[in-house]
Length: 302
Image (cartoon, rainbow, N blue to C red; front, side, top):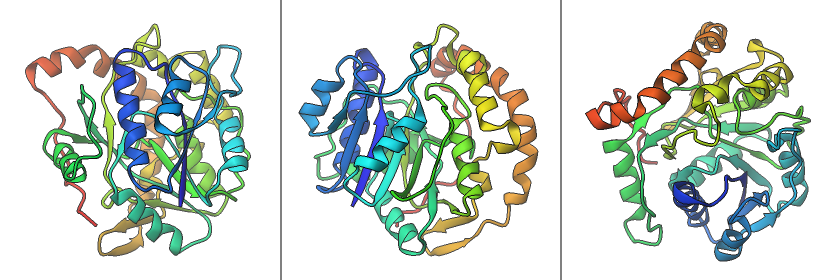
């Protein structure tokens, strides 16, 4: 079946609620799903025991203490019990259509990277994934209250265990590593498949309190700059807009719009830090006023 692997923030306060929601959503997809959780942060061991997750307490870190992505990928590929793997951020809730999309993508090719856009949603409480209508409720919440993010936000990466990544020592909790993975997949002659219209992925909104400078710091501090250099600069930073193929409920087709992606690739490193600072600073006011970005067309049920 499928092995998810990830790392988490300490399971305290609101982060505990959101991360527990995410982990339970993955486990609820199938009895055969395996989840590997890296790190020895507060509450991780207890959550692994409670949910029956595989705990890998050791993870390599940089000198600032940030976790290295290359180690987690190598280790997960070495120990996973399934052929299909997915690195996913620990605040992402998945609906069952994710597995359907992955089955369709993997059946058609030997080397691929499956990605998709996310729905940003404010979630404050624990979600009951055992309820009979859990899947329908998730989709209804995403479509009625969520905002579909653009192709720059990539939160999950599904691939075969044999994928020859050979990653540089990028760290999570900072930017650019996700866009590098999209570029790397294409360099390795894999299909980059966008399943946004077939798989609902919900990002539970949160602040950036773990960084003293908030969202802007995640984009601009020394570790972010190092990720940028290790990735090879802006021309190695791809997004979902660079996908070679798009999966839809009725079939799959080539992504003929990907020739537009280089324009955003040139501008994004310049404009994104300021934009993220503005979003972070105005989030409380926008919530109070009920302002949200206009929603794009919703995914269709597969």
